[in-house]
Image (cartoon, rainbow, N blue to C red):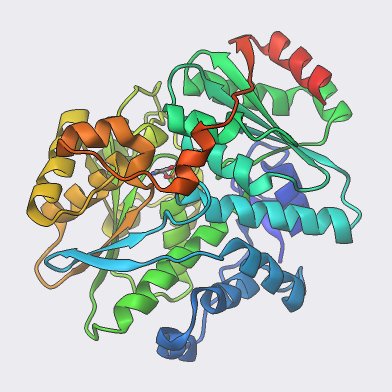
Length: 434
Ligand SMILES: *Cc1c(COP(=O)(O)O)cnc(C)c1O
């Protein structure tokens, strides 16, 4: 299968090129040339399948022309060696916990899948070594760093805004060593993202280093996130027949949501989606008005969604031929400020004892407000509440248990390179560190 650029459908790339380049040469996002349909039998038998079995079918539909089944299956099984439980937490509201991977956030799956796929290209397809650049507001950096840790032929640079990520998040990408380098920028997340963008556009750097991105612009990172939606469906289908399914997705760069839209196009019976934003509500405003106005991000307690210019927006436009009407028919937007998020965490805890993290809280509140009677809502819980310990403990007014595998990061020594928000200094650092 070939991948075209959202900026020009005639610009095409192989899977390997799309994954290694991240962005198309014209700065567009890669899209698969066609979206494969899964047969009706797959959906009939899905309740009897394990998550890796489901994911194997989905992965084969997209990547099966380019990677043989055995290799693809080993990429899938190395990626998905943890549970994704579904729990009923309210009337007709279920939570699908996507956060049981190594860094306790949903990005683990995409990051690991991408690392394993790149590693396959390096080992089997004579791909040169690559440098991965990733800007993070917290969770991407930890997932990518852990997903790529120790993978031969790949060095990872994580850029993060100094003082603007939680201690727990910071520990997850500054304590690893090996092939993972943390770069602490005196600036905002948007500054980090611009530094990364400038690096990709810098001719000299691109001649010296083979640079790629592990943000959700990369097809190998965002497409595997569609596994979640099939997995949620498979679990719901065990108990409910007439489903009228609705997925509520905590949204920032819109990678997770876009993967859900792909799942629907592949035949997954989903009625509609909710996109829950924090105060960074560019997409919410677009859904309501048809006007897309990116703006600088503001800091919130759901910091992995502090995004002012969602990078997958163009993929959604492309998927719907730019039709605002059809986009807003399939997706309804919601936006919550910090105090609404805190109130939501507090209220659900009092009502049921279930603890939400600040991102998932947005998606839960969207369901409370927007789900119609007769609809079954699945909330995608994107991070373990312990990753946002201070905020969550304040909201529920009690201590939460920190999983030992999460605590272990904070016990290790931090290593990072501090730089000002200056491209030339960043460029020098990059050259010196590789
Ligand atoms: C990244 C992230 C999101 C937003 O996901 P996108 O795919 O960027 O929309 C939501 N919640 C958490 C915890 C995240 O880490």
